[in-house]
Length: 173
Image (cartoon, rainbow, N blue to C red; front, side, top):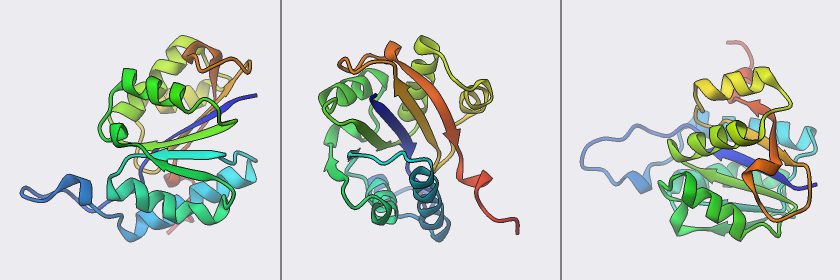
């Protein structure tokens, strides 16, 4: 059964006019949140075989904070992932369809729009997860999809299994 993990990069420093958006770094909370999400994915037995990410520093740092949990996962930087839309994301997933579990670490609004599109076309196994996802995809969040067949990627074949936000994982302060 094929799996797709769509993740928005973890929390970053704010953008300021005159700074290069692609070089924005994660803040301490972003590193912590990415590690928390990696732990949850590991506990749920959702281990990526391949992770594709944009060239932006924040996606690379998100993966770096997670990769110790997934030492056998391959990583590939895909230039087209930076600020791509839903059609481009579908193409990227289709191009990497050979992975049993594919993780995509990208940016909003594209990653959120793509996750919502898949839910609209294929449905969900969890109405609460779909409702929460429909509202927003905060930094560090992951949408977990499972295909009902081994056929090449087709959004209609995937159903939302769960949606996990770092905020729900952090210890109470």
